[in-house]
Length: 215
Image (cartoon, rainbow, N blue to C red; front, top):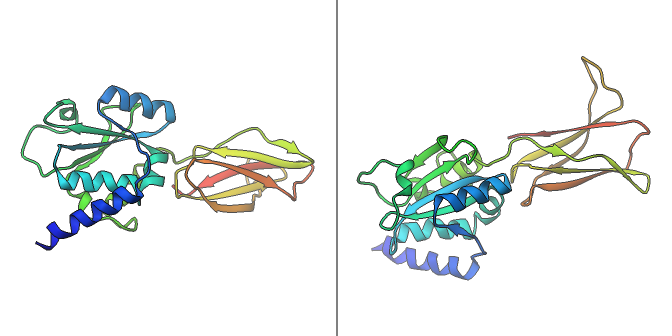
């Protein structure tokens, strides 16, 4: 009885705080959106009236929204209306929702299919829904744009970073085949949007930059 009582309360909270999140209802649209944005696909298989399915999708639109919207194209497949989910789940008796992470560039490469992750959330602890969202986020390496001068100050745009990842910007005055000396000039945690502008207020006449991301 306690579980049945809590669920409507949580769903009410989600409806009050939910942000706009597009749920594609077919594979083609989800894969096209993911490929265009450089994201992975989060597949949720459920059906109308499934409280656990609504709970999971509510998490994606509330507490997990920055990560989900930044890193994933979300695909909801109602198993009573579509059989596309069977590309990733063989027919059988499952507890809904079914969750799968898919790389649109290699559609056969899908990860961690599970129907239990929705039960635990919170911090990115092992085997929680949020942990798997971080684990299969789309980007692990940064891309640096051209270095430009802005009123005599070096400025570099850094993009394609994993949401929530720790990032280190490093500078060197000379490149060598071995033993190049790199100095850390900025550390930050990447926010949603995956783009960051680094401004080197102490730029030297000759400098090289690189970016290190922990995931």
